[in-house]
Amino acid sequence: MNTTHATRGLATFALAALPLAVQAADAQTADTGETQVLNPMVVTAALAPRTADESLASVTLLDEATLRRQDPASLTDLFRGQPGVDVNTSGSFGKSSSIYIRGTSSNQSLLMIDGIRLRSATTGAPAWEFLDPRMFERAEIVRGPRGSLYGADAMGGVIQLFTPEGEEGGATPRISFGGGSFDTQRYSASLSGAEGGTRYHFAASRFDTEGAPVRRDGDDKGFDNTTGLARLSHTFESDAEVGVLALRARGNTEFDGGETDFVQQVAGVYGEIPVSETWRSRLTLSESRDESDTLDAFGFSVFDTQTRTARWENTFGVGVHELVAGAEYSEDSISSTNVYDETSRDNAAVFAQGLLDFSPVAVQASLRYDDNQAFGEEVTGSLALGYDLDRHHTLRASYGTAFKAPSFNELYFPSFSNPHLNAETSEALELGIRGQYRTLFWDLVAYQTDIDDLIINVDTTGDGWVDTPQNVAKARIRGIELAAGAEIDDWTLAAALTYTDPENRSGDNAGNRLQRRASQSLRFDVDRELGDWTLGGSWIAQNHRYNDAGNDVRLPGYGIVNLRAGWAFAPMWSARVTLENALDKEYTTAKFFDGDDYINAGRAAFLSVHFGP
Image (cartoon, rainbow, N blue to C red):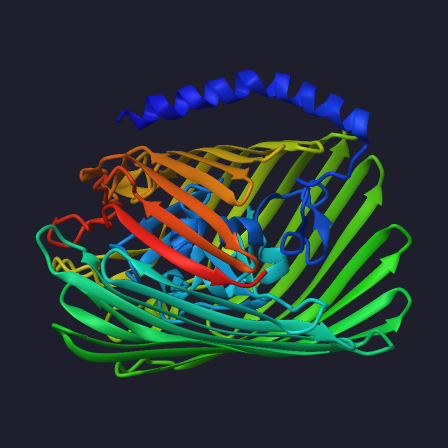
């Protein structure tokens, strides 16, 4: 298929139809005066609850209903083709995956679980492939720099996953079991509730599959994952609150030439008190772990990383305005079969943000100072302005800076590192407009991100080996994103169109597209309720990408269709069927070092049965 023409055609249709849809939705809202349902509350963009239009950010919420309808086998299935998001995988089912937000690399964006950051300190990137989507009730994708709020690596954006809290009404059990293609089995169970100010949620899941080949004519590569989750909190009569969270995923994944045993873990405890009517203070102590034991052709290797963090956050209300100020201290440490020159480093930071409301003008300004033991001091800031054109349309503009910390591999890996690296730095400009109505929203944004001191591997010895990382590269990333959604009668619709120009700006590859990034992407989701039935599908299409920095090895574009159906066949009981890659398209987003394609799984059908509300 010609994905370029398809994407352009749908974009033209969407933009042409937009005025009519806006007029219809506007009239409907004026007639009914009903509460908007497509303007969700989000917290990641501004460290405080804000509706999507008030956040002055490009933000996508994937709520509990979306996760239940799509019932994805992996987070990459959920995020693929979302506005500004590109996914790169080395096969299916627990294989190495990268998520690019606005053309930045996977280690230039953050993954957080209930406010706790999770990543590998050695690679600098999260292991997206090892987290079970069934453990989470919603996801927020914030696009654009958030370094002034979250520190290192928030160049492209932040993805935060939220676990269930428990709701009033007594203990509520949920059970799910099923399986399907590739000898896949999936099980999950949870118990949640709230009583007397105490909320709780306990859950466990198991995913086990023989897997699919990652190379043509190769053997199946299996994957299994067992996850446990516990979340408990209590709110006192004084409105003070304490809580704990623990999530641990453990399993094994096979790849071409070896296998890895992995652990992904986050744990935290927090306390929040109302110091006064206008001041709330919250202290969070957390730990995250990324651990892997790998056996391959090079032998046996261990890479265990740990991050411990203390974060103190204070929120002040000043009339209609809000101020946030705090401090953060974190320590990364590693344990490995490789002998690193350094095995730990710490980072101390202070930050402040003002959320100012001068209706119809809104101002958000933030500043953060980081002092890192390994690479020195960094100051990041952002300024966002919003203007309500009327009660349905908000114009916004923002400027923000961010930085990416060099990883332990880049700084200290034996014989292949550079302890004198500086942090990568970026500046980003964004201009957007959002239309928000009762049954419809749309969001159009244009942006540019300039990145300096990009770290790339350079052959400094002339021996033909890529052996030393250096701060020598630059990149300029421009893009346009259009997101839209509607809930009309029994229909739920969502669309995303993304154009990205991630350009290398230095050296022999100046003018080339950054490797493994598509420049055009389309996603369209449609779901319909029919009594006890729900029917839906997703169409995802992307154009070509290049596997190498020289843009000599081109990977073709692709389009896939995913179908789904649900049936509530008895009180508290339901069944779901998903058909992934229904047209059985072969597609690849990366190549092996020897030039072979990493292939993704073909058509896959899954059936699951669920008990619970």
